[in-house]
Length: 115
Image 1: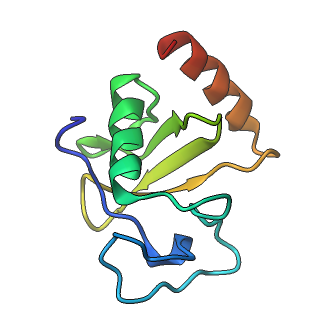
Image 2: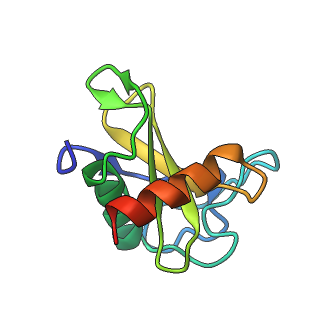
């Protein structure tokens, strides 16, 4: 599954298109930006998705893929990748805010599973 899942991103969660192939971005004020703290290149986003799946930090399945996958970057930022309901196996992601309850749980699990 880690190899079959694809990180494609979303212009709704990007301030900078970088290497995602977007002609432009269209951030939505109610959505968090995956590049709010720093630019996240496509290769890094793909790697985080794969690491999250391999670590088993996934939600219940929505078809053959989990609806959510969580991962933590090298600086301790927790990211949530969400499956595209119209394109099975394709994900976009964003950082979880400090106020999100699941954030602390994911950090703890990540430390145990990915020392």
